[in-house]
Image (cartoon, rainbow, N blue to C red):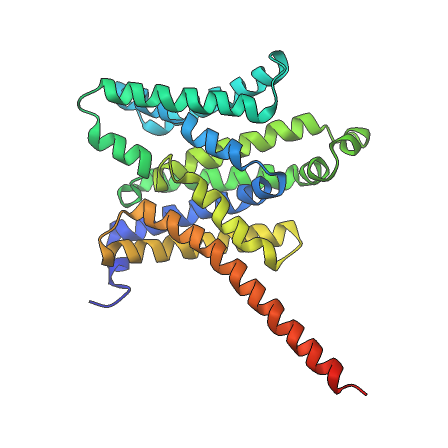
Amino acid sequence: MTLFDPFAAEFVQRALLAGALVAVVCGVVGTWVVLRGMAFLGEAMAHGMLPGIAVATLAGVPGILGAAVSAAAMSFGIGALQRRGRLSADTSIGLLFVASLALGVIIISASRSFATDATAILFGDILAASAEDVALLTGVVVLTIVVAALGHRSFVALTVDPRQAQLLGLRPRLAHVLLVGLITLAVVAAYQAVGSLLVVGMLLGPAVAAGPWTTRIPTAMALAAAIGIAAVAAGLLISWHAGTAAGATIAFVAILAAAASALLHRFVRFVAARQDRALSERTP
């Protein structure tokens, strides 16, 4: 058996395509998550999906519908607590994060026939991706890119200086809502691939890995998407040959990519600094 034999299987090809589409969405959205420091929100969204997915599975409807409803409710709840409860963002997110996770576990534990489905929910089942899943993810990719392109200027202003964005008429509150919506969309789209517990790995890992190599946001998004696609391919190959869980392996490879990128960037800077010193010593 050769290294790339797994890609001869049709279901692995679908998994690779679905994972690549997820990587594009997470590359675009994850770049903003890193720039805005919204990792905790992404984590809360991922866990906030659990009750909706559990209820949808018990009701016999597609889990992604329950995930979307639950994540949207999580987003609305965070906003409501901040506006009416006068709570800070991290406090609001923390409260709903724990509440959603606990409710999801309660729903799962109350059903004795839920063990297999719970594993797929928590850790993903990318090898079960269907043609319908690929079509849905393609639509999500298009929507994500369109919203990110149209809101780019407002997102940049929101990241740099929200007050200045307000003075420029860029409506920072609306930009924040759109950004939260994109995070929700990315988390819901990615859960099928890597599960609700590991989705943040795909959202953050490639974006962090791309960060040291460019200062332009569009370039960082493209590089993060490419790194994410590579992580999906590598994760599928490793999981096939090593017999490990595909979703968890993909998420772990994505995080390793961030660590490897940081080390490589430090090494490149070290080599460049030594060359500069050597050149300055030779110069009379």
